Structure formats: C-alpha cells, structure tokens
Image (tube, rainbow, N blue to C red; front, top):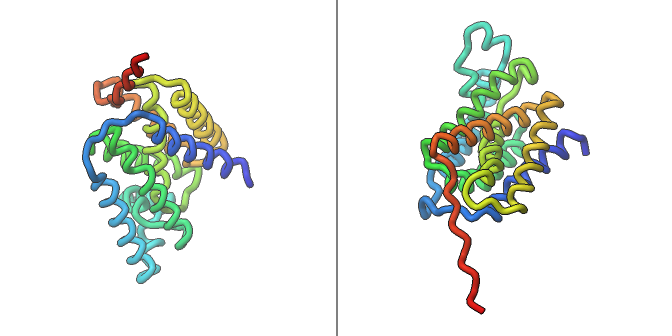
Length: 212
C-alpha cells in the first residue's frame, strides 16, 4: 500500500467514523440532495459507458482549459476516469458521506462545500494532475467539512481526535501533491467559514445523566 493510499483511507475512515460518533441534528428524513447527486452521477456514468468519447471531451485537461475550455473545470466533476471500479467507489463514498454532511449543513451550504471544494481543487489540479476526471475531490470536500464539525457543538474528545487525525492525513496528502488532500483541506476551510458565519453544526445536547 502506498503512503498516499494509506493517508486517503485514514481520512475517509476518520470522517465516516466521526459522523457516527458526533451527535448530529436531523434536518430531514431523507437526504434527497445527496441521493440526487448520486443518481445524476450514475446517469453520467451510463452515458460515458455508451459514448466513450464523452470522457476526453469533458475531462480536466490543463492544455485545453488554458486554451479556453473553461467548462471542463465543472464537467470533470461529473465523469469518471477510473473506469467502473473507480466510478463505483466514488458513488459509494458520496452515498456514505453525503447524508452525514447533509445532516450537518443546510442544503445550500452542502452545495457550497461540494462544488466549492471540487472547483477549487480542479484549479489546483491543473498543476498537480493536469489530466483527470471524477467527483472524488468533491466528496473529499464534504469529508473535510465533517472533520471540522467537532469544533462546534458538543466537543467530545474521541470526535475531536478523529477530526485531528483526518485533517492531518489530508495535510499529508496535500504535501505529497495529491489533489484529494487539497480537496479535504478546502472543504474543511469552507466548513470553518460556515461555522464562523453562524451556519455551524448544532449538535444534539448530551442526554441527562440517569438519576442515582
């Protein structure tokens, strides 16, 4: 296992486990925004499978973008360069992380984190990984926002420790010029900005201690 893969798995596991441990408010019975994006990505994947020429036409390509194809910064988030396995992995992680983030943030903030981290990282990737596609940098942004959620609401040591571990793994990835690290840190920065602006996580209060 490479160092980048190990750090990536640590960051993902930390965010998923943190979502389980944090006392999250329930903003809606069904996280329809997350599921809608998953369905849209699945449809894009089917289209890519039927028409293979879509990927080279819409992927991130630094040369084409610098030549004026700026739309690729957005369209690269909807197509997958990892084939069926890579695309399925991305959909599965969004399916797992999306609802956690949707319980933390309102849907406008969710979209800001998802696409804000995705588009920002697409720009960074012009130098770090000039050619590619996939929504992994978008759901990694959501993961980063989940990791900083321990800094608001009920601050429990296990949750805050997981947040620190996940962010450290993201920083390590960024130092290795892995775009997933940049995405995680960008999502974390957006999450912190939301918290500071009053859109932070409101965790459920701790349950009262049982009477002796």
